[in-house]
Image: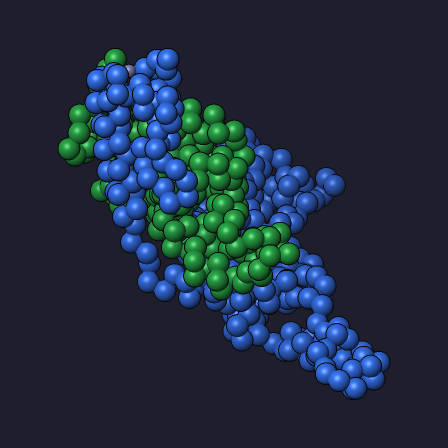
Length: 171
Length: 276
Ligand SMILES: [Zn+2]
């Protein structure tokens, strides 16, 4: 029964990196904070499932991933019903997104690709951990990553925001 | 011998250095890179691309007070189950107090009884504390009910919708969202909102709004009406709002831009009640 982990410790160690991941996934500060709040709430409820501090990052990411994907599904269902009610509210958010082309490019990716890409670039998890926390084989991580990167590159080249590099040499 | 395609597939994961594992390309890939100038260039560019993206992605400002807010939220949540539903409180004390030496055995026996009576007392105190009035002003409930949709989180607390609403012809209900609101003394209450769209052919009406609910015990004063159909419509500019109590819940039906047509929905509900 390894060392016991406290929520305080988890927040101290992982809140900021999780927030970055959540922000890149959702594109909005408020959504990101909401997402990690939910993540830590679930973590608090299920803390006894966490056996080892060393695996906490992957464990938290798994929770975050599940919440994020659920949120995406819910949002799709809600879009038609809510567009009337919050039409003015979405305005400032969109402005913020468009200022950040990389974020816009990320948001243009399918959620599953975005997840792999964000976890890959954040370097906090090993590839095995990424595969594990996303619940997919390593091979799938690699193929999604390759496709996601290609799409990202295309998007960024289209918007002319890639600095210091040309597109990958054809072969 | 690794071909270009395989080499490229395999280096996909190795372009960024990681503390957690070896980030060097495998021997096969390294050998291929040494012998293939095209792949060497492509690899270098991929590496540069990955490093740039990694840097830019990591550049996310952390909101001030984030950790404190998280801790606060977890603390409230830990207290919440007791208030929200009569879930079993976390086990308080067992007889296993750490005592030393001779006293140990007798403490075990007496201890268990003493501790369970202390636990019982604590429970009574907790219930008394829970029962003391700390409620949301109805006005604040109304403000939350009519707030921007974005203020509700995407997670539902499993609010149960009234049957009349789920069975009303022409009614389409969206996913319930919820929001926690402080009612003082470090306590919060959950307010749920369900977006709806209602359309009728005769008369031709299309309405969109939301049905908002919270426990009646947590709000005061309570609205006078005890059903949607009997409640008086309040108008706020072009918006319309109806509030009533039903069972242990208080409801607000909020229809932005609904001033002209919300009474059609009330009539439709009244007709439906007569049918059933
Ligand atoms: Zn090659």
